[in-house]
Length: 328
Ligand code: BDR
Ligand code: CA
Image (tube, rainbow, N blue to C red; front, side, top):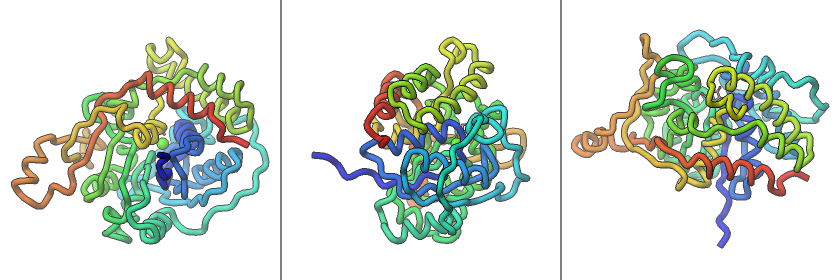
């Protein structure tokens, strides 16, 4: 029997791997993206919103897009990583087609709250940027953890070294105070971090094959963007250079949503270090379950963390999904 698609709000800072994730979600028959909420991160939030509108319009999708938080809750605004995603967030596209698309006037946090209140228990929030929108939404509506079905986020790391410091992953490091608030709330939350995203290397040739076999402005734009992104990762990691590829990062949050069986999970309480040289580190305390049971009050904040992944199966799923019949 066919299941109802997962209703998803996609919180994102597009971003090349954000674009991969968005197109995977639009292409997958079990996912219905009901809103895209943007944040600063890979680019300024204004550019993130423009990119989200552009990518959805190119794919022929009509989905509300909101502009959200422009800076971290406490830290000064970071410099966007133009060397990773391009100055435009999409690998410095040489040109853009004219598209007709306008923003939903609500702020991202307000949109999340409105949608969760209107459809309690039905919406999955997939967050793949810094977590300020979610922290602001929590402040507006403290019952949000009970109104959302679940939260799946790309960010953080447990055993794998960080990608912006020895210990910190970019999305968490960009706003550790927001992340700390999010991990302290009683959602059903799964963290898809570098422990698994650094295992899944997607070759540039895969995106070329998709663009060749499924000729469309959306697939050729994604291929162009990944060219830049793969050059960055291949310049940094010799084992990635061997196949001229890139890490899948954000798309794995959606892979987890539809194929959780491809991941091995750990459970525990996740704390975020907000100060000092370890700022942005996510620490998993696996003993928290027992502590919480004893204390009888903190168990709600136990999260799941993806620790291992079937990388080949993920790659195959991303490829098969983007080669499916999702573009008119
Ligand atoms: C994360 O940081 C961003 O650069 C990517 O889009 C991804 O969300 C990886 O650390
Ligand atoms: Ca991202």
